[in-house]
Amino acid sequence: MSSSDALSDARKLRCCDHTGTLDDVERRTRILNAASSMLTTYGYHAASMDSIAACSGMSKKTLYQFFESKKSLFETLIIERLFAPIPYAPVETDPLSTQLQGMMLLIAEQLLDEERLSLLKSLVTETTRNPAIRQIVADLFHLSGRALPVQDWLTKQVTTGTLDIDDVEEAADLLFSMTLGGPLLAHLTHCKPPKEGENLTHFIEYGVQTFLKAHTVK
Image (spheres, rainbow, N blue to C red):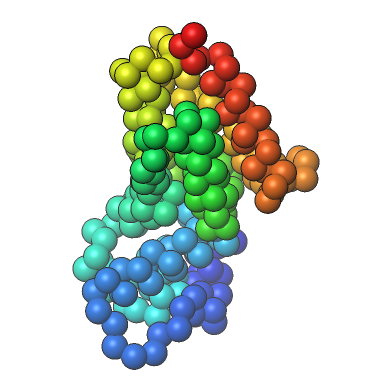
């Protein structure tokens, strides 16, 4: 779809309810909402600043008051909506399995959120055909590790001597693959029915038990 077509549709859609007076926080949120909607619906190229302004019900001048460029806007969108930190504060007296299961279930809840999944699907598509968005994702990808609490938790367990892990970063990737990699892929590609509810919980518990069995200090 062309940028002009997306702009026309955006003017019809008006992604948000634009009644009343907005403060800066609300304006910024609505701009990001519109950018997310335009990216997931039309792709990066068609999601012009004009179409985002129309979708958010604001002037393009207002957009540039918050974001200096389209690139800056989409970098912010990816950081805040896709790579947003996921805080986790385990009860340290709980068994390791309880702590780790709680953390992975929290990550699953956040990662399998509808907007995050839509953004992931869009980025997977865009990175294969659009050098601009591919570079944005490449520049920001290192933030994803910082957003998840897995490495910090594993590092603490290694430091206290409860887990035996040579490479924490590699172990974190392995843990993610064992617990959330398959469910995430199913949601993104529909290659198999996605795991949800109790099925997802049991799958994560099994992955956590297998991981801890391999790494718990005997």
